[in-house]
Length: 147
Image (spheres, rainbow, N blue to C red):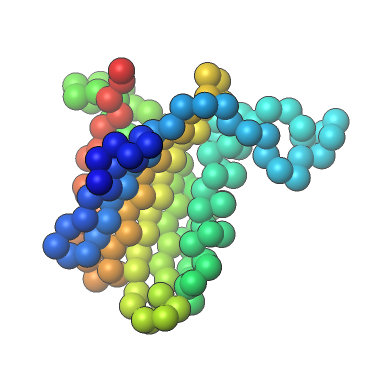
């Protein structure tokens, strides 16, 4: 699938799916903010972590034996073909079994939400657990191409 609403999706013979997403627009306030305390517009970091937490929560539906490797970690991706600079993403990875089939999967999600001017870049790769380690370098070699 190419450029459907800013999303691209590729699937390989091992059953891995790689999706990238680029979206422009305002980043909504984070639900549950306390008025007068933390009701400010989110920073890039808080918006990114909030998004990753939503992805993890949504991914648990229809899954069993769900395990997250830990809190989001730094995941820099190269900027441009010269790879002279990096864009800081945050990433989380998790494993789970499909609740219906029992088949095990491993997923990594890296994201960068930018509150001003408003945009999102994210990449998700999901593989059968046995294929994940061989496929992971594909995510690490991705580039952010400025327009």
